[in-house]
Image (cartoon, rainbow, N blue to C red):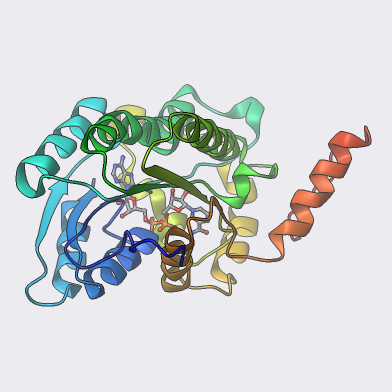
Length: 282
Ligand SMILES: NC(=O)c1ccc[n+]([C@@H]2O[C@H](COP(=O)([O-])OP(=O)(O)OC[C@H]3O[C@@H](n4cnc5c(N)ncnc54)[C@H](O)[C@@H]3O)[C@@H](O)[C@H]2O)c1
C-alpha cells in the first residue's frame, strides 16, 4: 500500500471490460468482495450473465453488453457509468482476442479484428474515461491489459504482439502525460504470460464481417494450446496481482517471473546488435 486510501475500497466504482470470462471475471469477483460498485462490460451477454450470477448478493452493479472495438459503444458505457454511479475509480481495459499464423498470410480481417479489440479497445477506454476522471479530480487508476507478448516477439503471433506492444507503449505514454499533468489518475499495464482462460477460444467472439482467417493459423495452434493450458498461474492469481499493483501504485504488472529473462534477452539482442532470439518455450 502507498499509505493513501485504496482505489479498490468499498463504495468505489470499478469498470471492467471483458468481464464475462478469465481475468475480467476474476477481477470483478475480487472487486465485489471488497464492496466496490461494478460496471461489467463484455461483447457476450450470456458470459456477462454468468459473471453476474457469481457476485455476492447485494453487489451494486451495471452489466452492459459492449463491443470495445466500437468507440461509440465505449463512450455510451462511460455515459451510463457516470449516470448511474457518478464516478469511475478503477478502469480495467482488459477485453482481448487473439489470432495467429504466418505474418505474410495474415488477412486484413485478422488485423482489423485483433487491433480493433486489443489496441483500439484500450484507446477508446482511455478517451471515454480519463477526461471524466481528470475532471472529477479524485484518485483513480487505469489498468490496461497488454501481455508478455507486448514485451517480446512471438513467432506466429505477430498481430497479437503488435496489438500488445501498442498497449504497453500507449500505457507508458499515458503514464508520462498524467505525471506531467500532476493528475490524480494513475496507470498500470498488465503483462502476464500464459494463463488458462477462454483466450484460446477467442474466435467465439469474432464478428461475421471479419471472418477471413489466416490459412496458416493452425500451424501454431498446438504450440499455443500447450503453452496456455500449462500456465501455472490462474486467472484469480492475475486478478490478485492487479489488485496488489493498484494498491502499491506499481506501473508494470508482470505476474510471471520467468518472462523477465526473455525480456532481458530481447534487450541484449537490441543493445548488442545481435539477431533476435526466439524465447518462446518449445
Ligand atoms: N490468458 C492468457 O494467457 C493471457 C496472457 C496475456 C494477456 N492476456 C490478455 O488478457 C485479456 C483477457 O483475456 P483472458 O485471458 O481473460 O481471455 P478470455 O477469453 O477468458 O476473456 C476475454 C473476454 O473478453 C471478451 N471480449 C472479446 N471481444 C470483445 C469485444 N470486442 N468487446 C468486449 N468484450 C470482448 C470475451 O467475451 C471474454 O469474456 C486479453 O486482453 C488477453 O489478450 C491473456
